Image 1: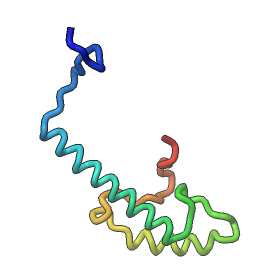
Image 2 (image 1 turned 90 degrees about the vertical axis):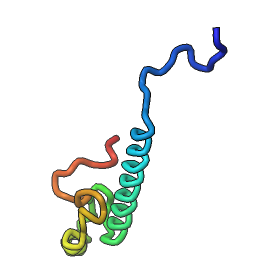
Image 3 (image 1 turned 90 degrees about the horizontal axis):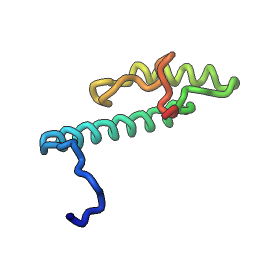
Image 4 (image 1 turned 120 degrees about the vertical axis):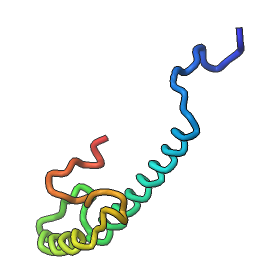
Length: 91
């Protein structure tokens, strides 16, 4: 019997093409996440789009301007603060 850390072989076999695709997709996800974080910091709201009552008007203006400036193609994903969008923090 072969001395191994795992008692059975993994049935999943990834090709080099699979690994390359994963690297590209992960890099794209990281870039989108960085864009989203920068964007949220610039418009000064909570990542879930929550704001205190006394700042609602200010944030609405910032958010509207940010919506116009957001480029789905450049950022690699949809506008992160759309109404009724699921929260990234519920994982």
